[in-house]
Image 1 (cartoon, rainbow, N blue to C red):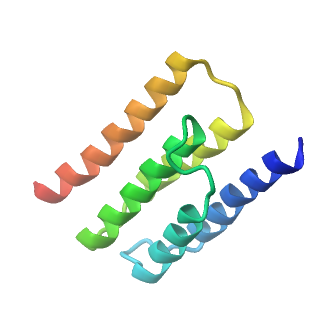
Image 2: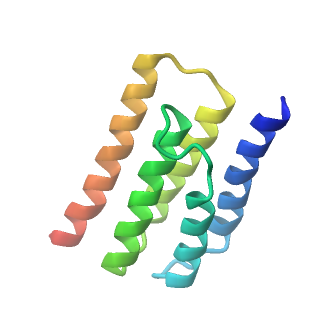
Image 3: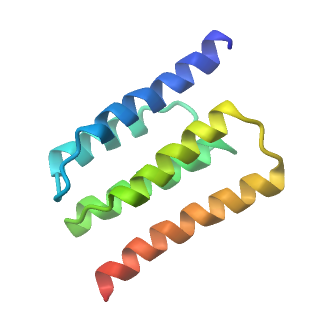
Length: 114
């Protein structure tokens, strides 16, 4: 693995470390710390892993603004981020993954409204 790929993975490692110490209840400081790690990822918004980090950032923003916690949604995003950095999914698989993450974000918002 080259240095650039290792640097990208270091962001996932740091995010997973922040996630591991999150409380089961709403944890504004913990979510903000995780959001800070995610926001530092240099390729946010770029195709692939960057789309995952953009989705994760949006999820964290929603959770913080709604004063909610959703460990499962965060965990799925973190696993997707690592997957995108350690494999080479084709365009269709990437599209499906990104659509799935969007559905998770939407589901989290719908749960709040219900």
